[in-house]
Length: 156
Image (cartoon, rainbow, N blue to C red; front, side):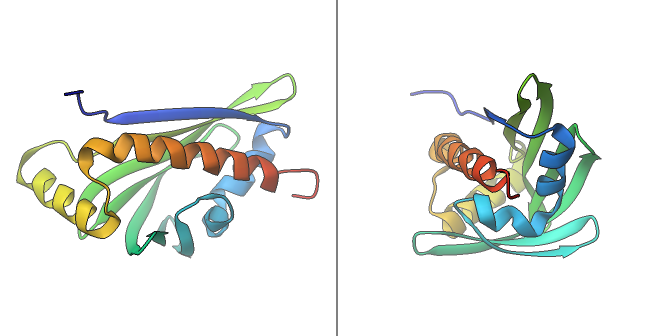
């Protein structure tokens, strides 16, 4: 049995400067353009609601932006029914040819009775068992970064 993975990172270089990539990421309405699961986003200041779909499962997450450092990092916490679920974020590193974008995910369901409730809700809403969540997210992150790079092409 392998140990549970609590954090995942994936990186991809995008041929735009960090401020341009950050502008795309910080416009949370655009998440549906590159995320393979996000189908709708409703922004409200530093908070937003995201609606996601995977196969026959549809769920929402209330999110709060926790890092908004233009050109460097953008991150938000996903909270469901008041329970911390995960932190999703993007770190931007300048490169010779653009920006290295590192998407990261950290599972916040770690302790006590709240963890158990959040785990059950996660399985019911997404169909992904806790032990497979990191692998599922890694696959989605790779697709997200490829789509982000395509969306940030010359016409973006």
